View 1: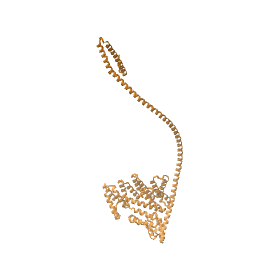
View 2: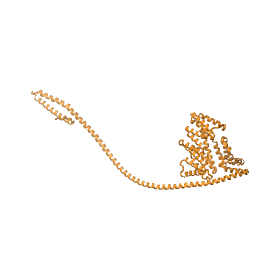
View 3: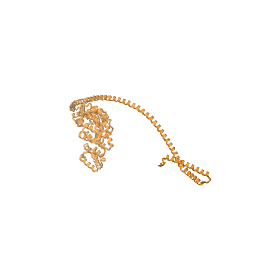
View 4: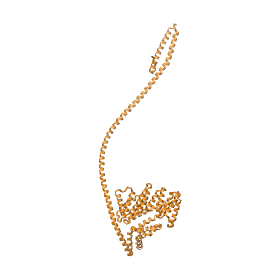
Length: 550
């Protein structure tokens, strides 16, 4: 893993072609130190903070090339937030390249869905809107604007980020026209949506703040100042955010310089104390950042605005003569020519005043022609909007007719359904009454069956008791018969035998009475034996065990 990052560093040095001698000594030492730290890193996660610091400290052209590798490293390290942050930075730098913006958008879409990914995609779309507005021809701008307004009129997006991207595109396209009366309406609408975004959406709010401040400069200076002041607050919070993440080399001096200079351009509505305060902030940015210092030396706009605010035309005149035609001032050239004429008139420089007046008149003539084209474009746009709204009105009318027809059908179907429902309710009520009667009848039958069941149970219990008693009696009878068989019959046989014996012993002797008694005993014994035998036979009949003799 370590060799992989060493190869990445060698590739960086080769691709970026770092001419260290072109930097100041402090930057050179810092860059060398960061490259040394990067060579010691073993993982993508360890390398990411060092690479981010390199991205912040390198010159813009070098760091832009480095940005793609930092995004890949953040992705490989599993830090989507850092990768999306770098994608937004790269989108801001590649604002003129449609192909790069599309590539960055596609890369952002590969990350898991999240609020930050949506904000990043919206920010890229805002940069695409800026590119279309600034670098497209009038025909293409008009076509795109018509399409945007058609979508906004007929099918306004429900998603807030889609709404922001669409409204921003409309605002940027209108801001390129001299007659942008509709711009304020759309900017105010966009501002109300942007202000509802979460506090973490720095990039969208900052982009809107910059674009709105520039757009309001010529039409609503007070709104421009308000946008710039809000932008200063957001940039300050963003600076704290990156400082907490360890991005100590990230410089905001260029941003502060641009905002404070733009604020000074509205010196006519600012008080002297505020002007001095903003001018001091500009000078601090110039001292802190070499790139800012180079910009300031090419066009010291802050010095011009300060001199004009104080009425010091002697100081303002040479600066205006030197820089009124500066490329950095192309969007405010007519205003600068106006300041130049005022300063030349005050200083009695008639030649400069004449040249400035001629240039001002020529520029004004060009703007009038552009204004005419813009008014024509506005009329075309208004006509297109009218057509869209007219078609939309026809669609709405047709929709209302279809809705009325549908409502009539629904009412008819509902009425029929209600009638059927009433009939069903009547049937259900009748069935309910019948069911209730059956339930009562079944309840009575159930109680009767329960009573009969209880009676049967009691009868069965009594039968069981009677059976047990009969069985017990039968057992007693059997015992009695057995007793007679064994306890009576045997003694009776003995008596009979002894009576025979007595009769035989008496013989023909004179004990005639004794013999009669013996015969009488024998006779009764036989009678009793016969009775006992009959009882035993009856018992055998009852038990069904009596043998049948042929």
